[in-house]
Length: 356
Image (cartoon, rainbow, N blue to C red; front, side, top):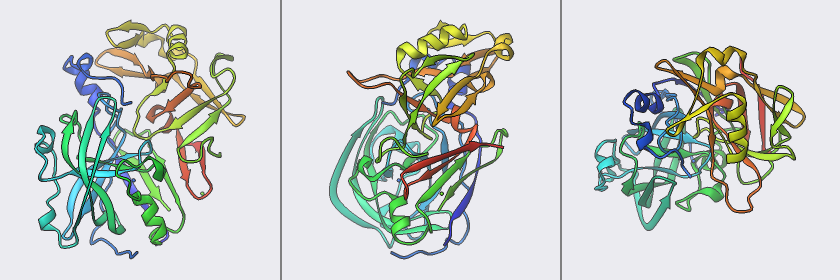
């Protein structure tokens, strides 16, 4: 199979829901993938506008696991590598709110005794490694290793069942080979490439494609940034920095000092854990220009400011920096919806082009 093009659609964000209910400040703002067959019917991948509470979720779609297939909605995340969904044996409250995998209902299921644990900034899971057939639309990975959660913390209010990571293998929490790697090795996709295009349309038009800007770190989707400027003046990344292109993040996250400087430049006022901007000023604010490999990638104010319920919020957020860590940004959906992005594992590079 040469490749697979899967449509996405947009849904309401958790950020909007929490703000409408005045609950946003109660949530954490940080977070700290043999043979091939054709599925009977293509599965439409759903684009869900990002969550704010744990990891600013972006791309959510349907996959099927087992024989006969059991359907799950998963987060497509370039910031991690593992595939996991809830187990029917999970006793956590979040598992009762989401679809759970029933091993005895699948004739192709194989269990192991390998346990895994993972902690995100505000969430955690414990589970065990298993094998079964996994389908993403027409793409089929036979005997795919993945995780079944037995305990979950912090996933009660998320609009997905599990996570499908598209990062490099070394980032896998289960220690198993990621699904993208298996699809490539099994010849299900012709090239080790996948791409995201997030349409500016409200509902439809977005796609995720499987199956060719070089990376600054082989092993993760980091790139080098020359500088970040506004009004012709460098405001961040003055000596160059790195950025992670992360489909599991909605916003533009950077070091506290740099983000604070940008908030002042756009006259954003702190209210609770948000930064509010005058809605009337959006048309007068300059774009934030990310210069990458000598090419400017502007992010206009209409993108880095979100209007909701009569208020306008800055989409620049602080990401915690480790001691002695070099300046690093995370470019999420705010950036990715402006640029068609190609993730090329075969050549360890990322391609960017304006989304039209």
